[in-house]
Image (cartoon, rainbow, N blue to C red; front, side, top):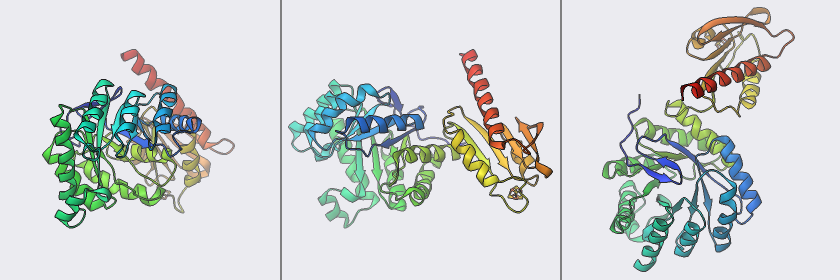
Length: 365
Ligand code: SF4
């Protein structure tokens, strides 16, 4: 059981981050923000995938204005991604953003900082301080010689100080680097010096496969150590994949459960049905189910009965197409795939189980 670092709870719109709140999963749109239709469509796809929070870039006034039309059409809270320009931050707060991703040390004059923080307070916006090893302040680079965890934490502390000096505490912090060792060390140090919620991620992690692996190693290490209140897997891929990867990382650590967790064997000469094809089709067919449950799809009796003991629904391949189905770890019935589809059969069982779990939940409320 992972013991989570005790952090303060803040709010991103109606979504709590930190404290005892579940670890949230977020992503970022990659449409042109002023293409309102495309941005809404992408946010909705992220919502369907389970995104708790979505970040939207606001590089210009057209984008902050677009928020006004986008936000009423979506349900997840929006983090407006601002770099440097204080006016964009104020506009985003006025136009419905739930959080501003801006570094107060980069805003400019004290007057501008004050105005941005006032806008955040007036519109109940939280702030995310986003330290990145690739864009550290020049004086810190000169002092430390190169990007390093100490310099990143020093940068974060400066931004924290500015917000605290303005009596603003509704913020979270990220301290990202594309180097796994640097990012992990920076987050570990930051976790020791403050109790603000941490947004954890490995920046610019890479493509779908390599980026997911890199993120799972870096973020997995931190989350296992109890560090992290909200996560984003940064992939050069469809943002929906970021949400899926984020949930898979949390599921692997037992930190969050959403949807069907499929346990499957890699298959070999002993398989009694086509495990790989079955799993690929099954995962696709049950992607819409949000009810947490575990399903084992195992090619033969070597590991099938053992895995089925630990899952809600289990399938173990048997001879002559005669497979064993388990429910709640117990043998339930035999299923012959002679003229029927295994996937259809398992999907029907999963849907029934989801219905049962939901009605039990409603009855308990
Ligand atoms: S469970 Fe059976 S089919 Fe699957 S990999 Fe192991 S031995 Fe092969």
